[in-house]
Image (tube, rainbow, N blue to C red; front, top):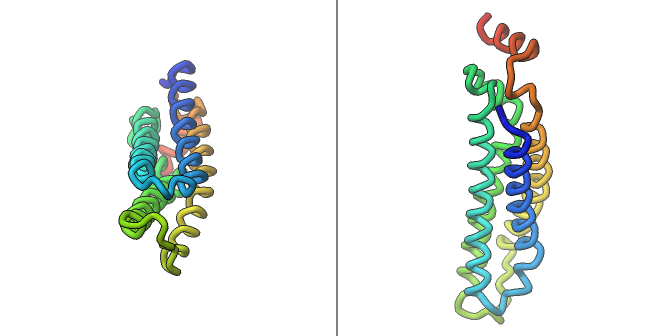
Length: 162
């Protein structure tokens, strides 16, 4: 069972990682004249997204629902967050690689091609959706129903095995 103190610590860590991601998305273009600093921020951002995904899966593994063998139920309830997190991570990595390849040699050069602008828009749109769904999932995983036997879980278990 997830302890209240450990849940609040994990939730705080998740929100700090989301806040860092938001910070980099908001202000990284201000550092375009310093590509080394920008690439370090991008790498840390990608690692933070990956850590958030790992934390969510560790929280899944800690639930009674997972331990009872109802992995499919967890996947159905949180499919949007899982898929969106993977898509956002991929979009972020592609955007970071593309923008740094274009900017690395000359940071004063205009790098915004049509494709890069489209990728930028999709990455930022995915970021907004990722923040919403990830935060919602992190808070929903604090529900005690996921960590103890309950009538709701028994009904779900009966549906799966019938």
